Length: 136
Image (cartoon, rainbow, N blue to C red; front, side, top):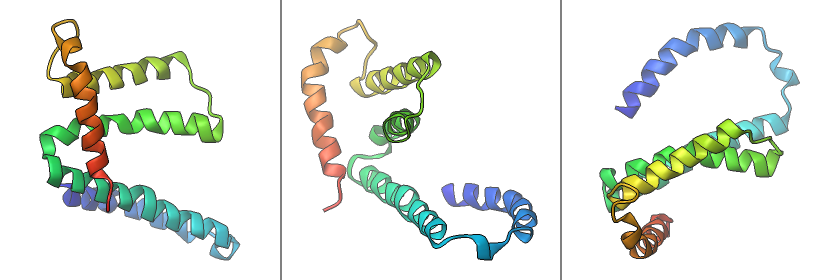
């Protein structure tokens, strides 16, 4: 499914990209810009897919799918830490909703209905799961 989504998106975006690329002075693109392009193609995109697919193989899709909702939350946190991007009230609220949703999904219950009793063991289990995801 992912391959077909990527191919469909590429088919729609390629003509627009080719029109813009035709008017670009490629000799003005620095080596650092090309290095940045290659870095962002290999590490964030390819490496993250390797980790996710390894996690799915180890733990199954139903246990891993909820964690993918954390991507925008971590993007916000990293952009604030690295780029000094401001975080507004809407982003804080969204982050809390995302983290709460992942917690509720992974804990197997609804807040206020016995989830608190399972938190201790659940956190330790999640840390073990995340440790198992690391390559090597």
